[in-house]
Length: 116
Image (cartoon, rainbow, N blue to C red; front, side):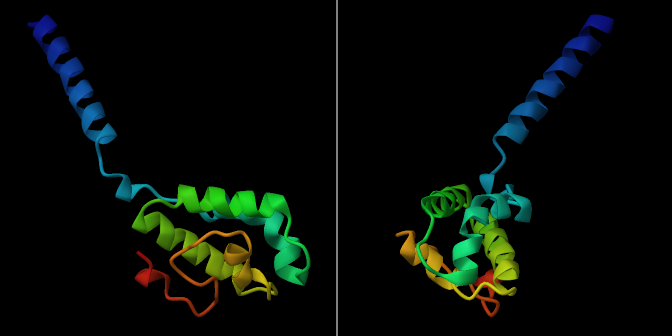
């Protein structure tokens, strides 16, 4: 009896693990800390313009790749929107200068709930 209970418990853990592993990726989030980490090399350009740092573009490409679901893109948008609301007048031009296409404009007026 104890052996059957132990086997059933192990089987339950395995099934639960498999279910969690196969959960849709849509539920995965991206944090503002992660977004800030990706785009921190862009801050000097976003503030003053000039030459865009190569590390900025690699960060933008990395963020674009990491935000691979609708939820993650919406969260990244919200974080970037908050960053852009400060004194970063050149932030909107960063994606195009880096040759990265994102589905929204980096602007305090962007409605991130409409990003897909």
